[in-house]
Length: 392
View 1: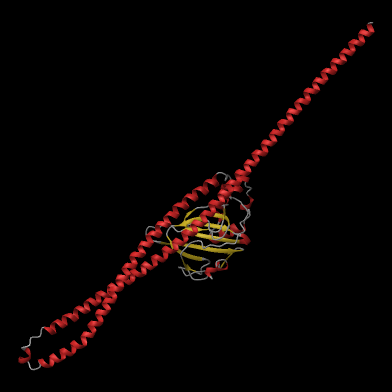
View 2 (view 1 turned 90 degrees about the horizontal axis):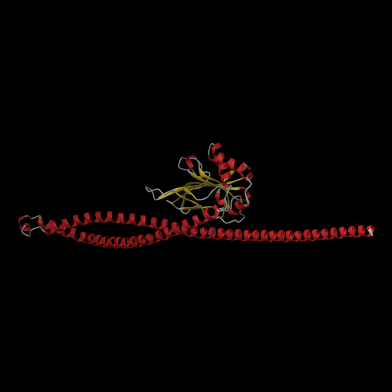
C-alpha cells in the first residue's frame, strides 16, 4: 500500500511536471508568435517608409527638374529679349545720329538760303531812276538778270533738298517714337521674365537646401585652392589636376540635391551671355596681349548661363577677375566665366546647359558691361569655336 501510494505520488509529480512544462512550452510558442508578428510589422513599416521616402525623393527630383527646365526656357527667352533690346538701342542710336546730322544740315541750308534771299532782295530793291543817272546800270541790270536766272534753279534745288530732308527728319522722328515704344515694351517683358526667374531661383534654392548638408566641404576645398593659386591660370590648373574635390563622400540626400551628381552627358551648348563679341580667341585684347578666351559685351545686369552641362568646381571672387564660376564638363573640358556681378550657383552643383549661374554687373553709369569666357581642354585654353559653331 505504501509502495502504491509512493508510485501514485510519483506519478502525480510527473503529471504535474508535464502539465507545467506543457504550459511553459505553450507560453513560449505564444511569445515567439507575437515577436514574429511584431518583427513582420516592423519590416512592413520599414518598407512602407522606405517606399514613401523613395516616392518623396522622386517627387522632389521631378520638381527640381521641372524648375530647372523652366529656368532654361525663361533664360532663353530673356536672352532673346536682351538681344532685341540691344538691336533696338543700336537702331535708336543710329537714328538719333541721322537726326542730328540732318538737323545740322538743315541749319547749314537755312543760312545758305538766307544769304540767297538777302541777295535777291537787294537786286529787287535797285531803283529804276539809277538806270538814267548811271549809264552802267543797264549792264548791271543785265548781269543781275543773268545771276537771277542762274540762281533760280539753285534755289529750286535747295528747296527740293530741304523738303527731302524735312521729310526724312519726320520719318526718323516717327521711327524713333515707335522704336522707343517697342523698347519700353521689351523692357517690361524682360522685367517680367526677371521677376519670374527670381521666383524660380528661390524655389530651386529651397529644394536644394532641404537636402544639402555637406556641400560646404566642397566650398571650403575650393576656397583653399583659390588661396593657393597665384593667378587665374594657376587656379584653373589646380582645379583640373586635383582629385580632392571628388574625395568628399556626399550623403544620399546631397546627391539628390545635385551636389556631386554624375557628370551630365548631354551635348547642348549655349552662349554664356547675349550680346556682341568684343575680342575673339587669339586676337589682341585691350592691353595688347593675345586673348586666351572671348570677351563679350552685353547689357548691364544681363543673365549669364552655363554654356554646357557639367559640375560647378568654383564659384567665388578671384582677384581682378571679380566673381568667377568654373564648370567641369564631360571629356575633360572646363569653362571659365569671369566678370559676373552676381553668382547664382554653388560649388559641387550639377548644372544643365542654359541654366542660370549668375548675372552681369549693374552699373548705373554705363548701360553695357563685359564678360570673359574661356574654354579649356586637358588643361590648355582652346578656341571656343570648336564647341560654339556661331563663333567660327
